[in-house]
Length: 116
Length: 114
Image (cartoon, rainbow over all chains, first blue to last red):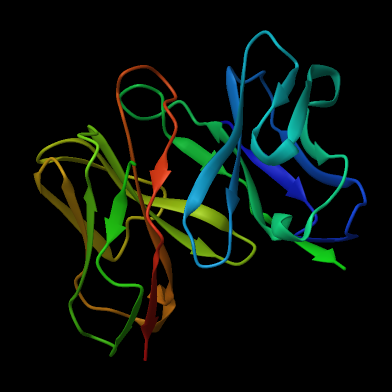
């Protein structure tokens, strides 16, 4: 079954610095990959979604992710961190179950802290 | 604006109590999910439902049951709460319009079992 691994449970950057959050998927190339964000005291919301074709995906709030088959990776980046980006970020992949293949397996999450 | 509402933000229960967590969505979604969120473990699926009265076990169903009598409501039941069920519980819904429709999440219920 598909799974994702997020390297680094906590990442700390200074405001204005590059944000890089890492996600690697297992084995076969998934048809979809997702990044979700959870702001404090809120549920998760979709940040961006990869579908087969375009390798660079742009999401909300200036985030983007690049699908690299050779590295089995789907890392999330943002050129310049803002204080409001402090949140927990989850990578997710369909695990092939569910009535429309739409059940997701989530990574362990990465908490992003932004220092002033 | 789409909405998934969880009835309680914080809940404190005693070991052995029967606990009901309620979730309501207003988007006419077919699919509804219950996840628990624990630090370092991400989200783990407890149960999901793809239609009224239909349910399937997720990855960690032990100690839990669910009920879906109406399309908009999906309840998670802890028959006899235990301390290892202390966690954040997240409800989500999605449409079956196409594969891999995005999930809409509620704000979560932080359950403490003492």
